[in-house]
Length: 387
Image (cartoon, rainbow, N blue to C red; front, top):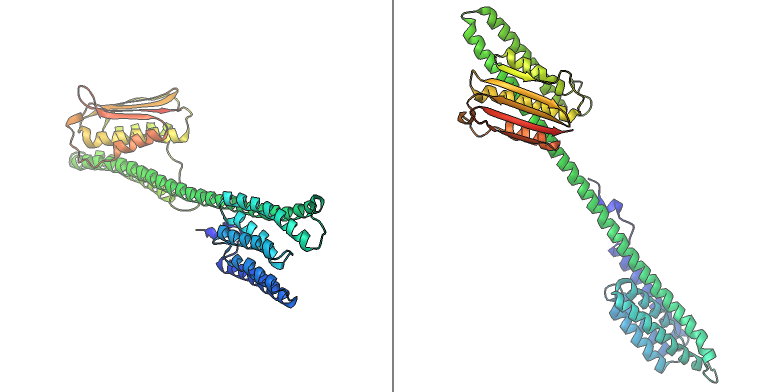
């Protein structure tokens, strides 16, 4: 089975995320803190540390980290009227809440950022020594800071959407693979069931003919050896045919070409009739003069239904039962096998799968099959296989 991880897009693992966050947080903290201390700005250094340090927890608690950074930035506006290095923490916190936080929290962070851009612009203009704070002076700062906040929020929002989309694609791919594996498993199970039905039909039919012929040969050998010789020849031919079909079915379990004969079809029903008559069964057959062209699967199903029905007659109908067989082809292949044997009085061990197998064959091709004792005695099997 293919490893699901091979189909996943590349992402940072837990160790990679930890290293990235450590590098980002410590890099900003050390650079900003030491930079402001070097410039003899201890207050700015402390504010920078307060704004940058919470970024370490931005993945696990993005909303809380943004709230701390925003409050620290608001406090800065009242105690320090100049931009500081820690100001970089605000767009990073905005990105984080848009990336990993709930969507309403991301929208709220964007609005807080816009309000903060106005407050920061107003504070910084005064700190930079402007004689008066005018609207013309404030607007460029507000637009610039607002653009930075918007870009950070948009990147976080887009990353969140991409992750959701990629996650859904991965889930669908895994589901499709599971479905495909399940379909393969079901197909294999269906194939095993089909082969089991084929084996049942081949073995049951072949052995029933052999048993009937062997019993007849045993009784005839004492009075007429010539009859025994002909019967033994029929037994031999039936055994060879059964072995050929079994080899073909067993070949389906192997890879490659089996090198055996094709499956029987509707035109092979005549052979079943001749075989049954040779075994001593009285069979009246109403078959098409020329074998019609029907799909291979339908032809095989009809053949197997006739084969199993004749096998059941040998096993259950009694020694002198006669059979009326009718096969007609129109919009559907219609098969009827009727005998005048024991019918409902026939003994059964309840373990046979013949009728069940015939029904399954008919159902596979959208057809129906009815089997049961006939009025007045005997047993009838009637099947209809649509074309």
